[in-house]
Length: 113
Image 1: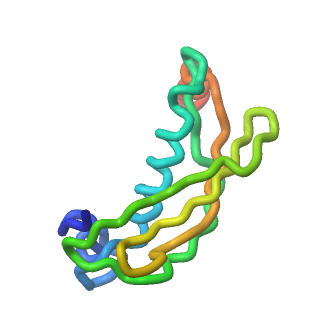
Image 2 (image 1 turned 90 degrees about the vertical axis):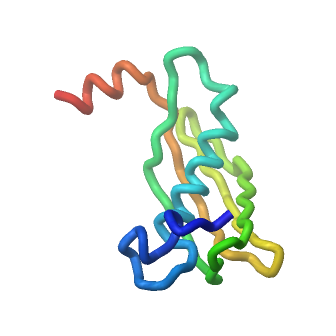
Image 3 (image 1 turned 120 degrees about the vertical axis):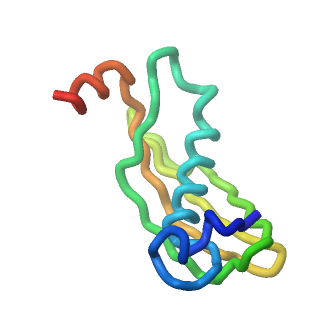
């Protein structure tokens, strides 16, 4: 459900009260995380590395947006997902999100050096 906190105006990516592109991307990324979280080994996580997205239609306040994801490619630790977002009227957005499975502790150690 698109709320005021999800809007372009609130995100600073525009001045209209519709679903912000950065928020659409965040929702799509969250869907990819949920899709694989139960398949990761203890101590593993995934990190986003690449995104391609088209934001095709505006979703006003109160509109319910659903995002479907499909794992389309696996190359070692690299995972590629296709996603599509839609509301009851139209396709809102689509794209691909690439994630890499990493060891959480090693990743955090490198990130904080």
